[in-house]
Image 1 (cartoon, rainbow, N blue to C red):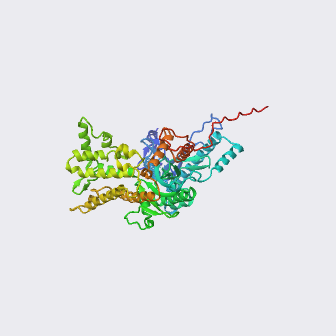
Image 2 (cartoon, one colour):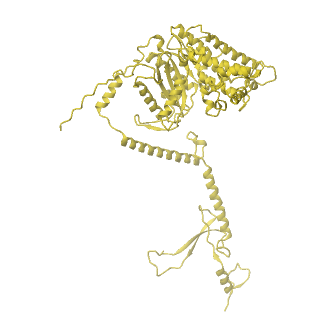
Image 3 (cartoon, rainbow, N blue to C red):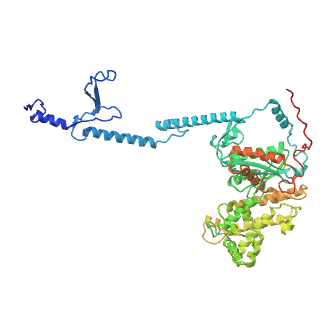
Length: 609
């Protein structure tokens, strides 16, 4: 029996109850939505469920039900996939909102530590705070592990051993090494250069502090010249001094930095001068360095203290601790190397220059053509002019010995004899640079005889003809520069600069020539028997850095803590080294420890139990 269904007043027409039941059985209940947060668009729909009388009472709810969250337009039943289109649309909207929020959170970067709070997004501040807390927790964990390792591997010393060390250190007087020096033996040259080190922080177990930050030895100085006090150092600046007429070599100090500047170099330089003059009883006469930009800027800062020197560069300054000048010199091998590099890029390679002097070009091609012609011959005229010296790479371009073996007198002789006439300007440059290098590379009293080069003889007279040659050499560079500036033609300032050496190299030659003439004559007038100009080069600094890398064995890139440890090792090795034999390691005839004896030690008494 079928009964018409007419109770629903919203129906447009009457329908049979059996058909309504069939339609409802084919439909599915809408599963609702997954709300991210409650809004007014949703309502809570609760549906009672059948009560299982046979189940355990603890697991049964008092009023069994199942809850759904729906949009207000949901009609509960749907013939599709069990979810009403209005609820499906809401789910799609919430999913897009969630993904957009996640992408926004991923794109947010932590705020800078010094960022103003009023102008910074709170989310960025939150991320920055979380990052700082994480770093702090990691550092605290590392410090805890370091302390535990130090306590585990440390060795305690008794009071007697500690007192012995204190007594030994107190017995070492200041200036005992220099007490027996007479006047001219007290003159020293300060060498300063920097070395690349590994940026790393190390806990020093002696002082209990982290080593590796930039530090110039004075907290007030660090605050004045450093932009970031907690910046990790990447270079070590070493101050070394060597005697002009003695075998004295010593590292005075080293400083952790990340690229030195002239303002940072000024206070520590004058502190080193004060220590040498007042504490070590040594007479500071000259400072030698490479031709780096901070060093040249540091020299120019003393232009008002040059003592009315008639020069367009600052090559000397008044010594505040004595009545004499302090002279600046650029490292001669470094100047020869930069000159070779300028010649290398003239008309070949990167071709950044096209040097020209008095109508004739100065080209690297003249030297390479000479090499290839020499290779084709059966008998070589230039045995030292090899492939390694002609085809330079990123490593060989930094080696000064390769540059000095290209700009030599033998190359000049072959260029003048066999090269075409247009190579005369190149031969002239090689000849002048070779003479300049010989004037500032005098190493012994007999080497000039063996090599048959008179410019390698020691300076013995204030009227030495090499002083005149140095003046002629600088006049040659000055005339070359004037010829490029006065060359007729519509050339830009940059184009005229490419016809000459780099201005840094020219300034280095200018400073070194003026300083060398004055300081060498000063020594000879002071009563020094002869002058070896090699004492004003940076070879000891390069040797010292090589020793630093050598002590690390396979680890040739030490951090600042290892640099200091190696420095103490080198100092101790030199102080207790034995008398030298026929090697060139040490030339002094005396042992550093004069109380070393061959007497047998007394037998240790046995303790009776």
